[in-house]
Image (cartoon, rainbow, N blue to C red; front, top):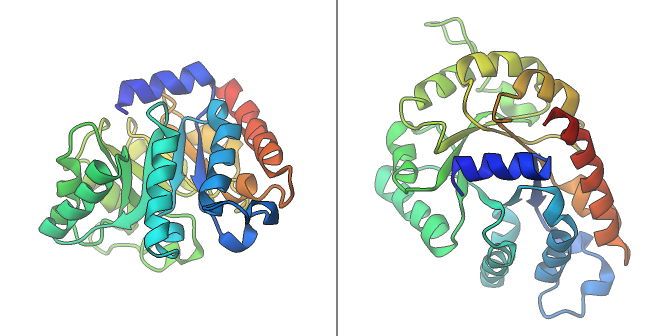
Length: 268
């Protein structure tokens, strides 16, 4: 999905919600256990319940890798089931020397048909550029993440600039990609940073985790993070996926997604 299609979907649906598909087998409702692939069935019902309320899905690859070979099959089936009307982000956090990154890109862009992949910038340009070489695909680069450990390195002040490392990541990476193929991850748990983020990268899309179970403030994010094209994809996973553990899990998931969509709509 290219930038203009994504923007059109956002304004047509009045939502910039991204649903994280992070299935934990022990939390999947017990009545799904009889299915040949309970994780896929869980995903399928979540997707059916939320299609019209979101513009993107973000399966976290770790939750599928942990299931072994069958997990890769479930991931592939899930991506196929989502189809082409939503942006599919492989939350894989890859990034390695050039030829290895190229193979990661082939795996998720060519084999899995994902639209985007999260990438760690620590190894620099030659670890990111192979992903950017795929036409019509996106790199979602980690900048300022929502976890507590983001303070260990990302927020460290650089002596040369007097600014935090995450700012240098965002500034330098714009030499590698464009607003049409490069997004940044900026966590909702750092609302005070969004004004500065927009000074550095006014046109790029931001993938924003941390709303929902992590308590991020959507209003603050929108106040400082929105641009003329919206420019935000706000991710919610656990608050939607596990709104109920009963027979009504999909209905409750829809209710949570609908509440977020209704909160987002006035900003569009």
